[in-house]
Image (cartoon, rainbow, N blue to C red; front, side):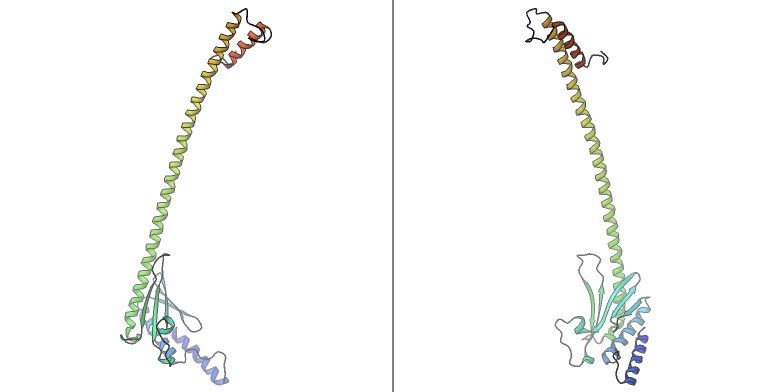
Length: 252
């Protein structure tokens, strides 16, 4: 992979030397770039021993990702001042710029703290001297990222399962409540019908008693105590009582 990049760069160098100019000159001719690619090549060689699958993309080969198992990890290998510029000053000679590598461990939760691993030229020595340590840390980071992912999906599954239980519990409670409401309403309607039946029977009895009283009172005045012919009014009133009385057969 790195060899291919260098071969392509050599083709660009030859074209530029032959034509005297080229819009697409060598990209990795500087000592810093040569060192960066050499370090990256050695790192990938070590990672291959752990079945890590690399991907190097971009015009300047700076889009680096590593597949560790089912985890994909983003990696940056560049001048330290470019990766973490805060508190750093660029060197006067770019070829002497301290080199650094940063590994980003993916976050699975929105509020999860950002996790980045960082190594740089310094008191511990050049990056090359820390190569195996860096490779092992990357493999561990991939494993940790995989575990975090599995934990995330496990928690999501648990949450979904709990939500399903809560929804089913709520659905069952609402169904039971609707059934209780239906029974209560049915009972209330039954009581209302009973009161209405009692009231209708009492009204029918009152009508019969009143008709009997009218007929037993010769002095009852037409128009005040009853309307129209006494006998016709009596037949009408008793028929009405029969209609109102729930104790009377429906066909009477």
